[in-house]
Length: 159
Ligand code: ADP
Image (cartoon, rainbow, N blue to C red; front, side, top):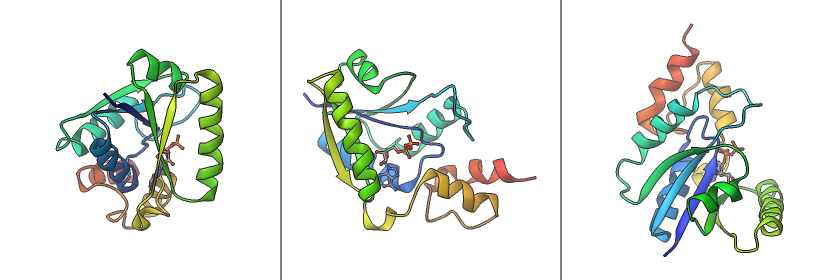
């Protein structure tokens, strides 16, 4: 059985993340989307809000579950008996950092495999940071995030 974990900050979840989730859910028997909680990072949304957003946008995927974690991905993956990590690749910068992370994970735990999924061409320039930048200045974020969560983002920047 292939139990996969797809980790990220998802602050907020983008259409790029959702595409990776949908494709990974077709490959894996079970997919756990794991929200990273880094106490040293300032997030726009709390981990409860990010969990709610991910639950809303993955309602149609019966083998997808949302969880939160702190610490090393490898420890979280072991605790839920996941054997594969899913990562998305947009460009060579992603490739370099993701490949390094994979090698570190392999040093920490030789059983851990990573499946890299190439980003869809429509999502190559999409990141949570870009969403926040555009939203700050009142730009249109419709092509960047799932429609179910647009209002939550706009609400944060309404003053
Ligand atoms: P972090 O916030 O920790 O930098 P992200 O939540 O942005 O991480 O990303 C989590 C994973 O999703 C990473 O593997 C990243 O490469 C991938 N990813 C991010 N944005 C996209 C996108 N637009 N298309 C495909 N994969 C993406």
